[in-house]
Image 1 (cartoon, rainbow, N blue to C red):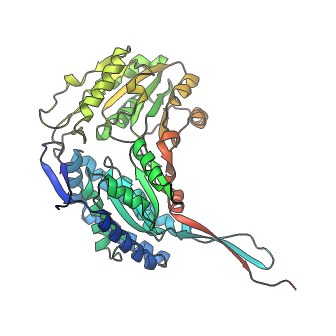
Image 2: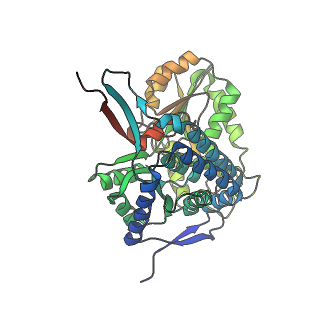
Image 3: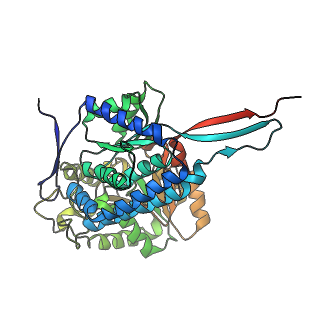
Length: 465
């Protein structure tokens, strides 16, 4: 019987980017066995050894930069300049996690108590399975892979079927850096084999980035075992532009937050609320700037929006826009007005002003270059509408008043709240979400600690007299 194969199609010209064999359950078992064997040695490695290996990974990954970026573009349609930027961001995150690992994972000693020594150890879990998404294939994976290794774990990367070469880039860089055999591996697997991996008794933690439905499936697969799961799922991130906002800066950055990577970001701005005194002016400026985007070959430096990664996504986005217009919204930027290439899986930017709150465009995750804008009377209405969502990954306010931002931010149900910024991860802060966006955290000290097990050391060092 022939092995199953995964074929990845280039969204620009529909050529075959790569074809790879998919593993069986038996092969998956062997991968986990190698990972477990590697873990048994690596768990006793010193902080210095872990740091040295991950620093070596950074050097080797940077050496693979040009090839890795080109692979991203061929697999997803992301403009090459943005793919190169993703490699740089991956290196920055890795360096930060390396810098904080030893202090974060150090034993924590409690205050002195007569006759006792008490401290807390942060011990590695074992084999970590990282199921990574395609839209930021490096940035999503590095959030787990490098911290897991720094914490003393072994890692198996199961990347999206759209971006399998990105997992292989991590494995190759760690191999070149001298990682023990089996410490960082990748698998190309279908849904059934992935389910088998989640249920494997030697997999100790599962990290998943993807859809809400996928998150439910991961939790159900892991439900029979007492293991941890980290989930980053959907988003419908709001931006609130206040009348006192730095105007031009707010227009430019909310637009970039909505359309960067063709809007295919978990933390993209997907709905904008604007205070009424500046609403008309904001919409006019937003429309003017949106018209400057250029669609085309993602390998062309002049291209600012490439094709979408999923062939069926343009029709889905068109349906969201049509629903918003049918409910009373105004299509102020029509996708048909752009010079869209005849080939490729494209959807040009669409902007709907007065987009009703109950429209699909304002309520359902879009994952594309579409945006709805709605006027609000002030903070109270803005907070109510921002919280009117099953998701909560990020939210932003655009204002010149930090105190106002803090007041609003305290009331918005979200994992990250920004002032005058959006669509960005600071590796010193935990990346986390609320509601249907998921649970757990990556990055920061909390992302490292999530990949460890607490052990309380309670030592009577002197017997009572």
